[in-house]
Length: 466
Ligand code: MSP
Image 1: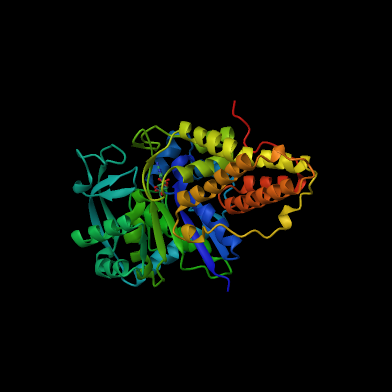
Image 2 (image 1 turned 45 degrees about the vertical axis):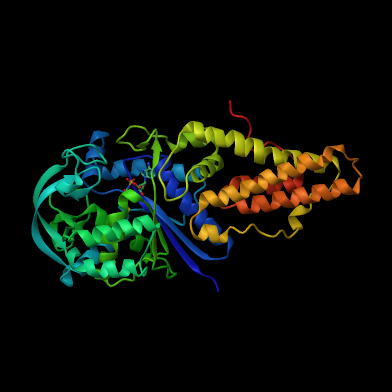
């Protein structure tokens, strides 16, 4: 039976550009989507951009755009280009300024209003523009938001509040019983710790002074709080699709936006009468010399620069190979360059080049693609998002194949020797197996290897970088 698989990334803030942090989630989701498609599953992969809110309004002005929408249109092309450069096979790219999305948000929030899940109140407190989040003094260090190192604004306005507090107990039950799965375990414990320690407050879901947003249908002076707007993309994006993908199977996110996805999102779904998403997986941060890579810290490594220099597959490979998925870890261009030179150019590239050259010399035909090779046992690891471990396993095969060549020394044999044919057969089968296992991670390389096995035209897969 075909299974459906609906996977999402967060929506990236439109004013930013794709850097290694944003690429991380997108590549991971892409690997899963490609892997599930290869199993024959019915996959739907959605990503996109988060375009409303005070932060965007400000960024548009700063960039000299009169109209925030024009700014967002301008920015969107860079996001799409980055994902295209990285070979991201999303099924739908959503923008929160899409009319269908805006209308969906209005219908959804009106439903909550009609059901009495939302009430009018007064908000007085702190707001961090970087996070687009209301803050408690206890969230701050030296009165500053630790993530953005800046003092939140004091705001005082009439808002509409969502009755988040009434979902506290229900959420604890759903998370504890794994009916709503939060992974890895530390993140589940973090959410449970928070839910058990603090009394949830109702949350303001509209803004009075933010013009750049979706209007509340019953009060046109207010706009929908941008996090509610953005979270609803997971539902609005599949509304018009003919297939039934809901509930989402997996939301991949970074750990900084866990609370929104593990508390606010399920509560909104419950209030709207929807099934809960099945699973949330929050990965760690990429750091550069110990500091989170972000626009705010100014230590950005942009994807476009890396792809241009190393190619899509080397970036896809290095980011997932470097750090166990779920943990924080340091990344640098040097590390990516080392992976390129050692694992890809030396180990994998040379294995393929040497083998194909020998096969051609021995005047064998490129018929290996017809051979059925067994598969590496990686499904279980992929199911648990153990990307690093899968890549280690595949590259262990690469090492063993290189070891096998060095041991058997096929270049010493006469071209017509039967033993030579046997060795080359084994090597080609190993390479075919490696290329098939690599497909979700390195689609271009996988295709190139298979085409070289077929045509016997050997070319270096990872040429030296000048
Ligand atoms: N727009 C919101 C998400 C709304 S989803 C309904 C947002 N956008 S973001 O652009 O700031 O971040 C998007 C994702 O990128 C988050 O999952 C975040 O964790 C991830 N990363 C941003 N910087 C990162 C690193 N340095 N390392 C790893 N991932 C990080 O939040």
